[in-house]
Image (tube, rainbow, N blue to C red):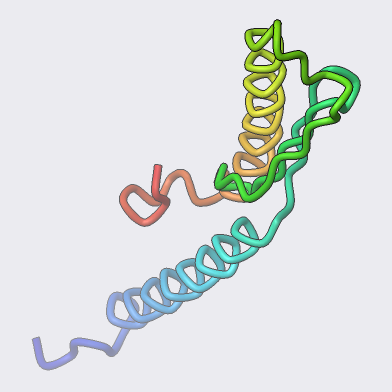
Length: 111
């Protein structure tokens, strides 16, 4: 064990650790990017617009007054749900694109 850190095996382990650290740093940067990425989900020709980040955290909803009918609450509920689902679909695409390279890292990838 006196040669630990020296020779082909020790140097390989050190390089592996450096690569793992670099990958973890990249993953953290990507996670931050996903927090800041704005996703816009829409429905009803943009009558309902939902704002969220790529981690599906909703931070705003806009509803056109023209679609607010007190006698048809279900339609408005459906429009809001459809806009959220549209945003979720877009967020999934961004998440998969940006985090996909980390999928093989087991617990580190968050999958």
